[in-house]
Image 1 (cartoon, rainbow over the protein chains, first blue to last red):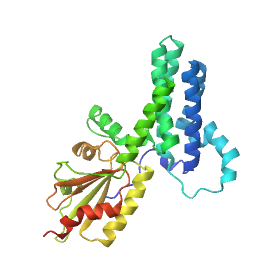
Image 2 (cartoon, chains in turn green, brown; image 1 turned 180 degrees about the vertical axis):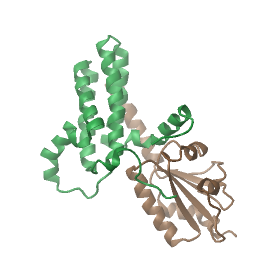
Image 3 (cartoon, rainbow over the protein chains, first blue to last red; image 1 turned 120 degrees about the horizontal axis):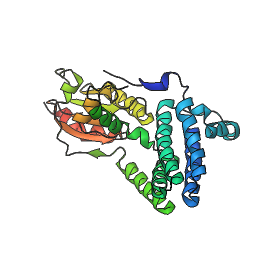
Image 4 (cartoon, chains in turn yellow, green; image 1 turned 45 degrees about the vertical axis):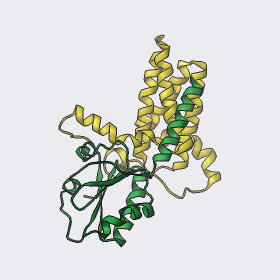
Length: 157
Length: 134
């Protein structure tokens, strides 16, 4: 009955340094704030590529993680704990979806869509950077429930 | 817009932080033991049913705390279910966040629930009456 650490991509991904996750979230927050201030679809598209690398290739290929490892981690020393990569990848996927929607919005003249999608991604990134909450992970149960109500048999994972 | 988004995010952050680990009563879920597929043994008084996602960091902290609690208090049973495997449990108990722990009495009626990492001392105090009951 006791289950933990099961499904998804976690088996292939090495665990991640939680400080690197916070660092990446802080950079993401700054970039998304600049997108909101400038209304630049190109900047949001670039952030979308960062999300895509984290979500589809793995967090260690995300430019922000590379930056963290090369600049910050060596000054901090080894992490006291590591966390599983699967929830982080999941959050990057959620960010990617919002970035794509926002980029489409900015480039097709649906500026409101661009701004709202960017704002949602910004809220999630800020919550991770400032509070350590992984909104995508916290809401995983809700997402699974929604998915099950669509996919009746519940053949998830 | 930037200010609004940051203000909203800060507000959400404080709400989530305030709710984290806080015991909430008033829920009326039933059938807790049935969800685990096992009836309570004669000496077991309380079921702590933990709903987790496939590896979330606070879920693992919660599991460690409750495993320790159940280890030194045999009248408490700790069971963990993964909502990815058992979305029906999340729906049945109306759980949207992980980790959420729902405590049931011997009859399977909800006593309280807590989202985020629980504080075991508060949990023990809140369950003391149940543990003492026959």
